[in-house]
Image 1: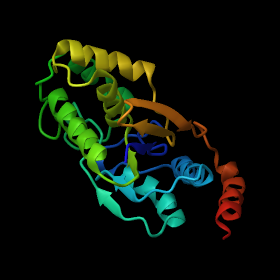
Image 2: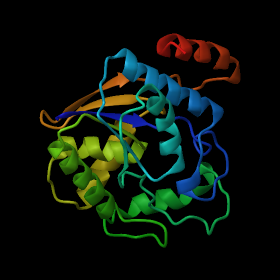
Image 3: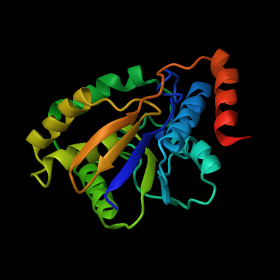
Length: 229
């Protein structure tokens, strides 16, 4: 199959400004769980017939797939290495916010070194490219329509490589990707339709950025109405 769906996880604790200590175990907020439910409903409403769900090893990715698994209970689930790009070492397990990590992250990007590994628990930009390239190659050769539940920077790398092809992974490539990140934001709970053969994509669904607890009743009724529950 050539068309696949990229579903970014719902709002996470880190997205909401909370302090977190381990990128792999960050959970969804209440609003993020609702965004995941809306994304599942959007897939269903669009008449998507997935034959494979793909999740990363990260908690927020797996939590975001739960509503879709409810709507499509017979679709198999596989875990692929599509986890988020962690380019700076965690602060030794000390909880910190995205704002706390920003100076260190800015310093990393200023070096534009694709081979730089910041420390334990991080990977180089080149390693991210390798993971994304392997994922694209796998998607091009599977005979199933896959729905991937994953992360903004990793998904943006899939799109960037779709546009750029097999260009050299150097400082220019890295700078271009950083600019691409600012130009092509992948919102929490959004769905991107990726055509690997035509080398193009389009946004299928964008979830509300902020969902308040008062919206719970409405979203629950909408979910029940769609599923017949």
